[in-house]
Length: 215
Image (tube, rainbow, N blue to C red; front, side, top):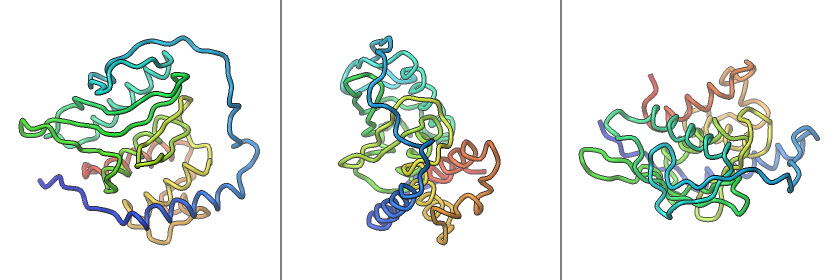
């Protein structure tokens, strides 16, 4: 099987995401307002690995719950990846100063005894959107930072209706599901998104579509 992922139009992806974010932000309710910027300090642990994958920059300090959530995320990403890939062996990323945020730059696996970079921040392809989907599956706030890195913030998973989530959903519908008419107002109807468990199902299927492991 060919595991080279098709390149996506960087302009179409970024412009589509920006438009979706703007449209959603205008109509966002107070229930979806950004959380306070400060919170009580949480216990932290030192971690040099995520779900067995070595952090290339060395050990980092992260909040205990966040460390567990990062491990669950990478295990989920791996479980939905092609069978010929090993479990992730290296992750390139960095934590925020409070230990409650993480910016992902790359994921490396082994295929046919060769290490390969299956996600990298600067490459806009289906695997990039797939990895974004996996993060949205586990974290409430996921953003794209300078250079294409993906930054996540700790918290319970689930659909909040925030602009970042809707921007991702619209782009995934258009680029991974082939639903070119998806927009911030109607994307959920196109993928059966009114069910209570729809966000988890949608992000899981988007991950599989992006990595070409859908049934």
